[in-house]
Each structure stands twice: as C-alpha cells, then as structure tokens.
Image (cartoon, rainbow, N blue to C red):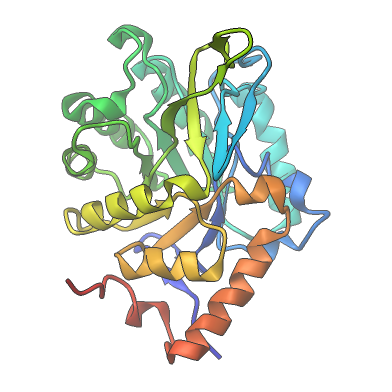
Length: 303
C-alpha cells in the first residue's frame, strides 16, 4: 500500500488528482464514467456573476501536442450554479472547488462572496487570468500590485480557503506568486493556458474570432513544470501543478519539483476516465521506485 493523501494545511485530500476548471464541466457530467469519490478534489467550470454565452465558434483547434481553446468562459452565472453544487454535493464527498472569475475586482469579490456561505464549497479558486475591464484588458495575474490588491480584497471578505490560479503569460511568475502569498492566498495553482495563435492558411485569417487562444496539453508540460519548480522554491504555501499531465509519471514529476497536488486538464476531454488510470499508474510507479508516501518525494529534486 502507498499513501496518496495530501495535507494542504487547510484541508486533507485523499489523493493529489484534481480535474481542472473548464475540463470537467460541473462534475455531474463525469459521474457516468466513474465514482467521483475517487478524486482528490474537483474544480468546477469558471463562473462569473451573470450568465455568459462565451466566444463565437470555432472554439477549439488541435495542435500536434495540445489544444488551443477560445471558449470565452461561458456559464450560467453564480446564482444558477448553486443548485448544481447542491446536487453534486449529494452525489460525492470529494471536495468541491469553485473557480471564481470577474471582469472587475468588484465582480471577483461578489462571486467569491456568493459561494462563501455554501458549506458544500471547500475551496475558492481565484482565476486572476480573466481580462480586466478596468485595467485595459490586462488580467490581474500580469501585475504584482494588482494581484496583491485583488487577493487582499477577496481574502479579507471570505472565510473559505483561497487558492489563486496564476497565468504563465508573465515575465516573472515568481513575483506574482509571492504577491499572492503576501496578500493572504492559502495556496496557488499554476499554470493556466499559454497564449497561442492558429491561422487558416487558405483564408489568410486567424482561426479564432479573438485571434489568440489558450494552449494546453502535453506541449506545455516542460514549461509548466519549470514554473511550478520556480514558484515552489519561492513561496511557503502549497502549490498545485497544472499543465500537460497525462500519466501517473507526470504527476510524480510535479510532486518531485515541489507541487503538493495537481490538476489534470486536456486529458479529461479526450479520455473521460483518465483520472482513475493516472491514479493506478501513480501507485504502480511509487511501488517500483520504493516510495511509500508522496511526502517522501515532494520537493526533493536535486540540481
């Protein structure tokens, strides 16, 4: 037997596998593929205060080793999500994480407070990669000062543990991570998608209406792994690694560089039951390497 439990300080997860926001719907959709109780946690699709239709099609474009998406964070709005969470909580004991979005700092705060009084919601993930109207379209995660200000405002007004999701599209992700920690974040999740471009050669136009889109999947794993390694050495709060995770070995590599847990993303879209396969592979690899618990591996990368 191996110990896969993860102590984040404010909550203990049965294992480190957490499907990422936007790749697992609202949880209910995946219950037909496996028992959700077998997950460490699950993040619901990002939610704004009001309903959003998202971007016009096309919204997806495959790359040789990944996926470009321009979904536009479509969703039903905060109040409409509450009954979904009630149903999901009756279905599973796995910790539910709400991904909080906003076009303004005030909207972030409103959405966070909307779910703060729900006992079913165990963690709020502040998605500071959303374009901010008041900041000329720049997302809070692209500025140390904006990150600090926004995280501080939200943290002071909620009781639910706060996870802050960072963007890789910055010059120095460690400075943003440090700002989030100093502002009171309980944990960090990284990275969100990398900005990329797809073009239609015949039409000589961008594939997507918004021109650029978010790249995820195996292509970004080396980049994300490096960023998680850098941030884990910079902050003292738990780091959740995201980016290109498709196997148990991938998970253990993120743990090795300092992650406490991981979020799986694109793989869920092509293999709905991937989480259980990844868990099995983790256990097998830990047995092979003689690792009895994740704490024996975490942050032990030597240079």
